Length: 474
Image (cartoon, rainbow, N blue to C red):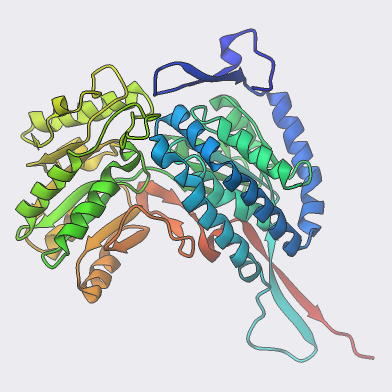
């Protein structure tokens, strides 16, 4: 794809499509010399880019967005082949969330980057805090929502005056190509945005390089520790969005039909491969049976099939190993007493030894089972009966993770009271699996640190620089 083929497999990137197992993208990995050249180019471009008026930077981002939207259908097809999301849903990543976030960041930038002037004006002094760019930002992005996870850092970083070097997942390498193509179409100056295809070892070299002033990483807890180790020789901060095991609590006063419909989608969209997907559900005993019956019935209506078929509503997981991990969690839970409500044989495409996996709903589960404690990142969810808000709160907090939590109730005061006690980055009421660009996207515990989106996201991609200017009088 634009690079000469390497002589050895050690230097080769291969994207194996989960759709049919074929090699969809194959090309040479970049080298340490390429890293050096890219970072030099980024450093040289950063000061002129910082000096570019914000209004001009905003125009570049909108032209970039224009190009992406015009190519959304083709981009969607590439997403389908690279990671398996149904083609009927894939283009929506650009046409909805991506477009919303770029526009919001562009509109928010003047406010987020404005000078902060102290309230106590002092005669003879000019005092203010300026949001200065960090320098060069390395964005290490995952495959599951390949545009939404990366745009959260890339566009705000560029608006703030940073240069960006993107290293995307080997599963979704064409995403980086699309970014580069769109920024080129927008006329972005050379060196302001670049991408590299790197091995794990060379990614660590990129992050450790003193020319990198910030790292934004979305991935596993293990990956987060690797990032921290890589940057430990310098005093920079990394934004880390890591694991999750997001809970939902359905109270006795919830709208049953709305809760069932939204939580099924929140658990199984993208084959459950979502950072903030619903992975465990706690239901008040008064609604438990009708909720479980409705949930299992709706989950059983998915059409698991080749994702290039417009009729498919559920595609394969990203790879067979990921599907086997979920199969293992499910089998272990059943062995310990859980009951599976979905007959996998009713999904013809669901086959052992393939990434095609039917959705599964488990009851009679408890927190001794990995499926309720460890991230599944697949189409399985466990449902437990609870007797009170206090019991639900205790169970929601009984987790090493904390990205989002979802409450289903008609009582706003109760939601705010319970939400205040949940150990999580975001509290939803009557919705789930959504990122609001006006709110900070962040997590607690092993979910990571830092934040993206909103004014807070800009703060994480800049540093405060204070000006204390005394006027001389003759």
